[in-house]
Length: 79
Length: 151
Image (cartoon, rainbow over all chains, first blue to last red):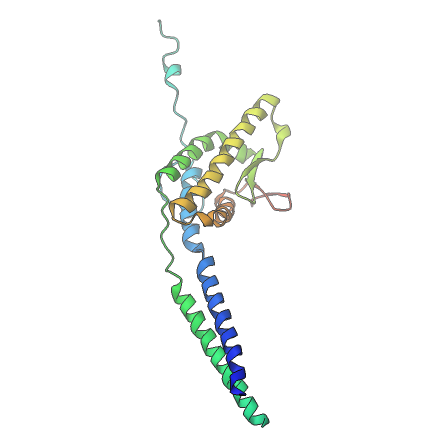
């Protein structure tokens, strides 16, 4: 009779523990990997390169000169 | 009588503790190793190229402090008075396009890695990393609205 009292307590603890366990799996976000992936993209954008390596010291390379449009190259030529 | 009741409660508490510990250990084991995220999907590469080409036009404005990064992973005008009306209009349209691309990037990073529900987390990560990777002298806007010059 008295030992029966512990079972509801045990069942409640089991349910709570399972719920907390499931919650941990669902909300898990791999922060470090995501940070690395984001850094790769950001460094490519900031340095103007496509697929380049991230600068180790955080300094950024100078963006390459923009390509001169073809129309400007032919300017001044006789038609 | 009291001792017997105490013993029953102790047994129950011990059982609950063991079950909790087991569940926690299971949940910890269930967490996979940190995965290597795909940053080269077609959609992500397209957006990245778009950001790269626009960045060449925006970089001087970042350096001069006319525009800056924001706490939520976007770009905003900081000092609109520094430009004439025409230049401001051009810059604002560039920023609108850039912000669209940034939001698409966060969405595609989540989608191409099989977890569309992580879009918000990606945005948070990117927001933090844009500011972290930006060179000294660039401005960023905090949640409070205050602009801060990166030391």
